Image 1 (tube, one colour):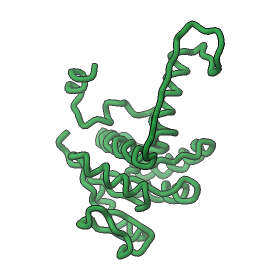
Image 2 (tube, one colour; image 1 turned 180 degrees about the horizontal axis):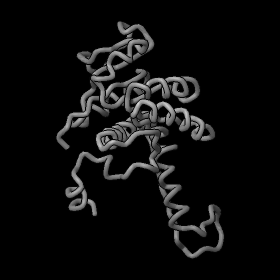
Image 3 (cartoon, rainbow, N blue to C red; image 1 turned 90 degrees about the vertical axis):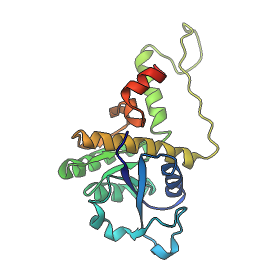
Image 4 (tube, helix red, strand yellow; image 1 turned 180 degrees about the vertical axis):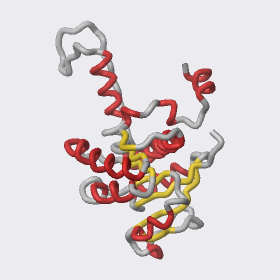
Length: 215
């Protein structure tokens, strides 16, 4: 992948800091700026050359950013910030209130369809990667049981041990940022979830390289 993806972070708490760390590990991405509701002078980034702007001024920078990673909380921040920021940017977030995913999806989809952007929601480990494992489990083993008992010894199992949950979530967000950029370049718009994204879009490697190395 040769294009440099211009990324911004909305919200700089622990998750935002983790995203900044992960972006530095991906050579095809560049952190353009961080938006915060706090006084910019009080926000100290790992890379102090990156500017911090007021969240209220976010609209002014829509031509400078390819994808905005939303690092606010699911309870109060994202329900408001997600639809608002999707008016101006392609967005990725880790919304994790399972019972409100459809409601949030609808709000994002309305904003994304109107603006011609992509809003990828609920990425992370759960919802996100574990959601994909649940999908694989129930489709590959349709006569499954989730308890112990008599069965035909066909088991799908996934284990995830996390030393730092937020850093892992940040890594997933950054990988899906690449996918959102590619989808947007291909003309896709609207709200998306991990179910709508082909795995190969997450990788910086070309399709031929993936086939050679991983198939």
